[in-house]
Image 1 (cartoon, helix red, strand yellow):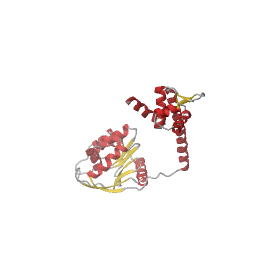
Image 2 (image 1 turned 120 degrees about the vertical axis):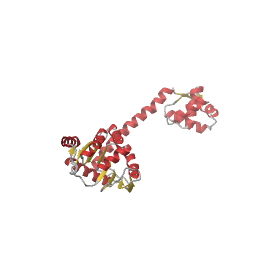
Image 3 (image 1 turned 90 degrees about the vertical axis):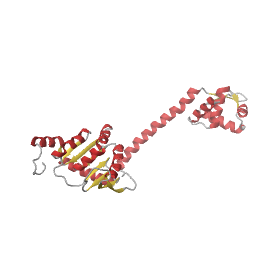
Image 4 (image 1 turned 180 degrees about the horizontal axis):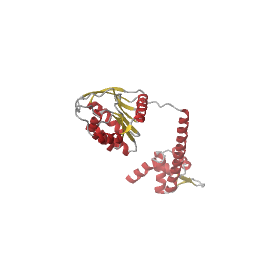
Length: 283
């Protein structure tokens, strides 16, 4: 009984109704039968049995004799199963072709993606910032770009964003960053570079600091005045998943990137001159 139930269950996956599956199994198990004998064995009415048999004939699973009374015979299992598989393969190929055609038509029409209602949220502590940012690293597929001051680099190291950047790079994504590199931030910048990030130096940058994930998810701030890197430390940043804002910040990043200097070039310049002397401004 268990084998019969499993057999019936698998037949249902090939598009048969339960009545058709039981009828086909009975013919395989007990051999050719007339419609009346099948109806009696399967406890169903004669008209219902004839409809079931006709459906199985149409599906190529049952043959009928030309003699009277008509005898119905189950077709061998292997060719029966091959037919729907080939049909499904044909349907899949047609769907793939339709998919490619629709993608091309969509590009020609220049449809504007609809992301629904955008979310804007003010993050008030380092803990809230980390809670919002870390899942974005996991979901990012193509690119993460950032512009950060020294405290932003310190925050990233403390909360493990470098390891998250490594995962993005492993998936084939890009990580790029811009910061004002000073002698005191060399190790922090190299920590970012070791994670696979391409970093550049922008002399004296004092504009908006931000991170953009896949040109949509953004965390930004005018300044980051953080006194200590504890989870409850106050630090105000804005989170949004608005694609328009994401495009704006990503475009701003590209503009800064063109003006910035490769990090290693800046670091070698700093190492050549050595640490700044006490009483003088930081190099």
